[in-house]
Amino acid sequence: MGRKVHPRSFRLGTIFTWDSMWFADKKRYKTLLLDDDTIRTALIKKLKSAGIARVGIERSINTVDVILHVARPGMVIGRSGQGLDQLKKFVEELVHKSSGNTTVKVDLKVEQVKEPNLDATLVASNIADQIERRIPHKRAIMQSMEKVMGAGAKGVKIMLAGRINGAEIARREKYHQGEVPLSTIRENVDFCSHPALTKSGYVGVKVWICRPQTGQSK
Image (tube, helix red, strand yellow):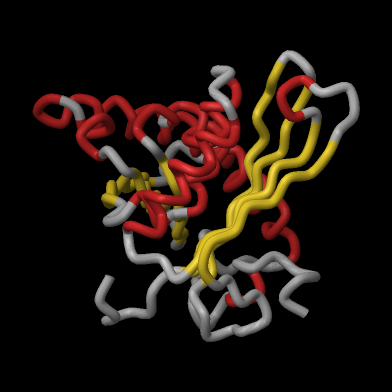
């Protein structure tokens, strides 16, 4: 079953939690879901250079809490917190525009990703960026796998799909180190799929990382 579903959603409630934490009735659910997607997409695009891994959103009656998980929080906060203030205004405009209610209070929090090399989102985006810059894909993948395993991961699997290196025929390439058990719910397996736009078209990058258990030495 682990091969048929998203590895992260497969472990929701046991290893991972939801990125959006709120409750709504049938009438408001669709609107709030689309609002979350708009906010999340805009922030990921704006904070790409800061190494953003995840955007958490929590809602109450008149409050929206946005939690940013980034690898380089200094780039988000800025000098004396100026960057954070500007980003808060940006998020407030998004929330007020999407909800149509200017009385909604927005609270912005920034949390640092403790180990970027164990985050599948950051690893996949890094590989995709290198492929877009025409760096040999094997070198990019091997370096990334060494960093992931060096950070204490139990295993890592990376797959590319598309016209790799501008080949006329699309193909798949798989690279694997260690163990990545996809069917075991208790294993902390992080996953991300990220596209790399090249001159020959999109090359898909998929990354699976089996993280060490909590409390286990790296």
